Structure formats: structure tokens, C-alpha cells
Image 1: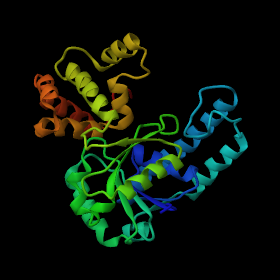
Image 2 (image 1 turned 90 degrees about the horizontal axis):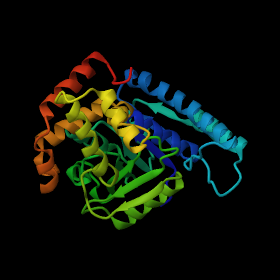
Image 3 (image 1 turned 120 degrees about the vertical axis):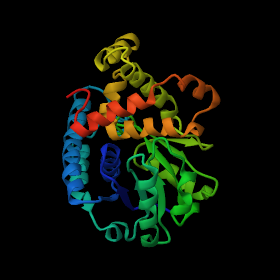
Image 4 (image 1 turned 90 degrees about the vertical axis):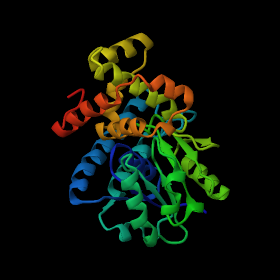
Length: 310
């Protein structure tokens, strides 16, 4: 079934990006938000994305870095057409507080909320009775398994994961991971959708916390946090050690600022309280980590509204 109407639940860093990218690729996109305050936080993200896409297109037109989520590199860039798609996406995106109105006639709902299992369950339980029979539901969870939530969706055969990397207009990957009850046809549909929004669809054939990307990224972030929480060094020095030592564009704390402290905090709490998330080898590696100190320091920063790089 070809998708037309897409609903993104949550307007955070990735939620807003997924929404903008899908709209840029011609889909009818609505972002469902919990409150008027959420609209106030989401609209500036969409404003910045409009500027980011325009800047990226201008850079591509002048021979700069290419963004595969915006245009194919094997054909001449149609700058004006790309800019027109940006404006159409920006003006066409809808923000909605009424969940029933948001999901009416939805083909696909992508849940992109914080890594809080309780909040996700509550969301799915409210969502389930409002959905049309046709609707597929996907989670953009970065660490949690779809099997944890399938029964709460009311349609486990149409529920799976669709996880994106940050800055999806240039880091254009989408990991598709089902759970035991996912209909294979639905899995294939989501692969097709990912390709339609200019992502490289990456099938994950077995449930795995962290999928592909975050199975590698999360231990890296925890290592950086532990160096800080244990008083070994400061965030900027830790980042410099990584970026200058490897040539990577960002260190762990720069990445945390990008994904948000709330996400980092929830990941730390999961690894602290759910040992089953870890393989035996990784569990052994993580045992010396000072998770309580990490959580306390991050929580203090969240309460003060701080970032590592102000």
C-alpha cells in the first residue's frame, strides 16, 4: 500500500527532521504535539530546518558538500526545483494538538518521543482506538525494542521500528526492524517508504537494542560520560581527544548536545536499571561505569536548562 498521509508524533530533534524530510519528498505530513508549549518548541526547529535545507542547496549548487537526502549526486542539481520543494514542505507541514484529528486517515504514524517506556505505552494506548484499520505504526526509538510495545498498539502485525540518524538530509539512513508479529509485507512497505523519502533503507533482520547505529554509538557516548562523571577530564577535553585523535567531526558531548540531554539521561537510566540490555561481554565492559554519577550530573544540567556547549 503506498503511503500518502504521514503523522509524526513528537516534534523533537528527530521528529521535526523526519517530518520536514517527508514533506520535502511530497508527503502530506502532520506533527502531533502534546501541548501549546510543544508547538512553541517545535516551530523554531522547523524554521531552522527550512534555513538549513536552503543553505545546503546553495552549498551544493556552488560545488560544496552534497546532501543525498536532498538530491541525487549522479545528476545535475536543479536548484530552483529543490528550493521550491523546501518552501512547499515548510508551508505544508501541519501542527496538531488533537490526536484524533491528527491521525484521521493516516497511512503511517511514526512515534518519535523520548526514550521513556511508560510514556510510550501511554501514548500507544491512547492512539490505538483512534487509528483507521489501514494505519501502520512505527517507532523511531533509538534503543528500545518494538516487541516491548507491540501489544499496546492494538495492531502488532502493523507495528515495527523505523530509526533515523540525526541530520537526515545528509546522514540519510533509516533502519527498519520488525518484531515477531510484524507482517513481512508491512516490513517491505516501510523499506519502500524509507527509500521514497531519500533514505538508504537498512533492514535489521533480528531485534537488537540500539539497532545498527546506536549499538555502536551508545557505548561510545557512555565512555565519554564516564570519563566526565568520574572526574577524569572535562567535556571539551574529552571531545578534543576524540575529534583530533580520529578526525571525527564531533566528540561524545557535542553529539549529546545534538540529540538532547533528555535522550542521554534516559539512555543512562536504561543501562543502569536494565542489565538485560547488555550482552555478557558488553555488560562486563560497562560494570566499572559510574552510571549514578552520570545520571546526577545530566539531571542537574537539565534542571538548569544547560548544554555542554552553550
